[in-house]
Image 1: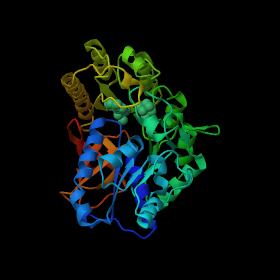
Image 2: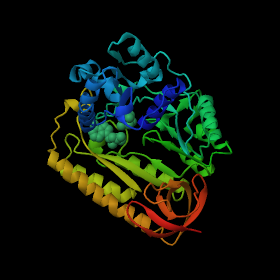
Image 3: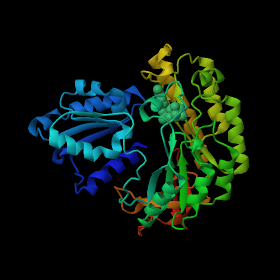
Image 4: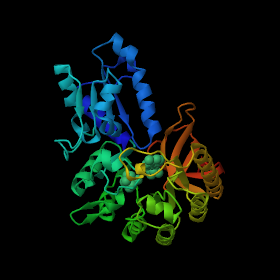
Length: 419
Ligand code: 5AD
Ligand code: SF4
């Protein structure tokens, strides 16, 4: 989501005739697009901002800004902490970021823009072509998982009109996009006047130039059978779900306000596999949530084994001000969080390794994504299920669907030869 937001902000500046610089020292404006999901990310942003002081001292006209979720959360705090910060702009005000910068240039004042934007709902400028293009399907989130800051900083769930999304995808396909990645914090609940996610997938599927369609992030409580059927019936929709389970313990899932049980998750994964054979599922997990006992943690470890995820992202619980979980005692020691994190990654690593090993000797189709930076012969791509494949070719095959015979594997990627 932040990658897309950064691109949309860049588009605003480019449309006004500005240019992107390669280094900070050549820039007139430096913006930090930020994440608030964990405290560690916020601390790093403050450290990076402080490091810009010498640049600002040398060039007082330089404009430095904090944008994104952390700006929404920190507001005036950020101006107090960083005396040379010029702008604090939340995610729903980014649609007018370049106008806000113009305002700063004219008034030389420090500006805070948070809350809902006035220009919300306008179609964004999309001139930059890319092979895989993100398209926003919906903003915000209404789920209020007890640990999560997103509903507070991104606001309430709003789906974009289906027609607007399709038009944007069409425009991007004309600029060379071969893959469309539909984005929403909880994309499973996409709803536009009777149209659901399955309808949106069907509409994007009709574009001839689009070869693949992905969508993230799926919430287990709202992922319905019609979505699995759409994946099965629409050959360009990738059989891959990023559907975070977060925990395998019913007690913890309830405290997290996730609205499903371990049993529900297992049934859902089984249903997905029944309807779409070969579908791969990836997950996020939080370790060390308040009250997580050794037995709760074991339930998470066993869920990973039972479902057999393609990969899992594991995070140590970080208490976020204002959330429901912030009122609970953060009682799992950091060291234990670290240990649990490592154990889950080890379990997942073995599963990923095993899954990848089963593909050795098989032929897969990948969308070639480009040459490696260090070796022009080496190129990478992804299977529809989201396995990363590395192969050699003298011809640049970027943007093409190519068949590769897999020759070796690790937990992270596959290697193969063009067939
Ligand atoms: N602490 C740790 N991890 C978190 N996530 C969200 N909020 C927190 C938090 N307070 C994780 C969830 C989510 C991913 C994007 O970040 O696993 O799916
Ligand atoms: Fe956060 Fe839960 Fe919404 Fe995901 S579904 S963004 S974890 S509140």
